[in-house]
Image (cartoon, rainbow, N blue to C red):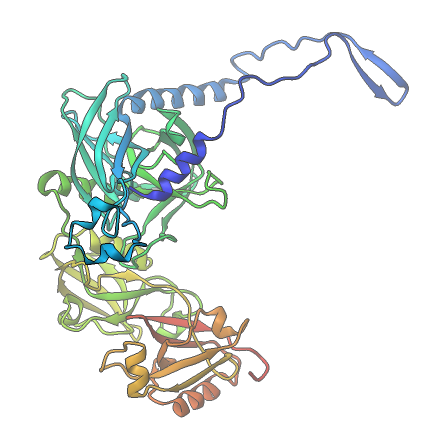
Length: 510
């Protein structure tokens, strides 16, 4: 279980709810000052508005009440007990060091573990089948030794962990029950910004079966907290209030259909600040079904790194519109390599469906079954082509389709210094033998290079789609191409992954 989740819940428990609001108000006529002096206003009672005047509001209220009453019985509270990490007690008695292994603990010396720390956490879940299958977040049940599920009718049942998938942060729990209220699946691909959505869960662990209302703020959001660029994005952003304890709860549309699983917020305070995020049902459903059948998930992979096409980089690839996913790296012997994908190709379609950005392709590929044959529509130097590939199987240390759109590099007017990629430098930065380019040595603060995210140790492989193999060649390429003040496109290798970076040179010499 995530320690941060526990800390947030623990913090919430320290906040005592006030028993009452204490204050006094004067009763009787109100005194106010007007243009003509002090006046007394007589008592006034406003008549309620008639049904015709508020018909739209009452209709909206009734609709939301109907959705809430339909969904709430299928939402559960999940309480988890887990063990924290054990830490060995330091030994200050040198005499104990001569004892055989395992004996020191009897004397309180080195090797004597402290009592395991018991941790508790609270989350939410959604019943997806009448026979007791519940979907929630992986981080809610991670490391759990005991799972207790509280149903809407207040029954508390023991949950069994069926399977987890860290890549999508999803998990399935099973309770021994039947004829449970479940929720229907919705189609998250049909969501649009501005649509009404409701979020269900147990904020702060105390307020079980809460519902909040908001809109879809955006779709296809990347995960800003991802510790692995290969994790699929595609998150639904909403302003329906989500707080610690809501993780794993339902996000539903106006028909009461499950369109997402609430999973994280972005906030400086740790509490809701208007930006909540949910895993779309497009991902949740396929992941949950695999977990229910096999206890694990086999994700598809192509072996490429991706950038989004943007107005700033589209012309470098001879594109008429700023849409699609740019292939910035192809892993040797991967499905992408065997299928003929090249670095610099722009993927515009997959199986006839338009691809708007790298995140869309990443989500689509990760949900495919390994061995699936797919057709990719690509643009190579602006010319349309079709490629047929077979989706591979994701391995923990493999390179899957990832959306690496972090920025990076430049020189001269760029605010950086580069050097040749010598054998010593190659060893220091763990660059593969086949990689060629120039190494970033220094980056000037507040420079275009820093703005683009370049760091010492990055390797610049191309300038404006042309290979660069030495520091002198790189300097010539930059001075040649940026004298007109135009942007430069760099292909940058950084920590094992390559990505295209667009840089805006300064007007003065750097």
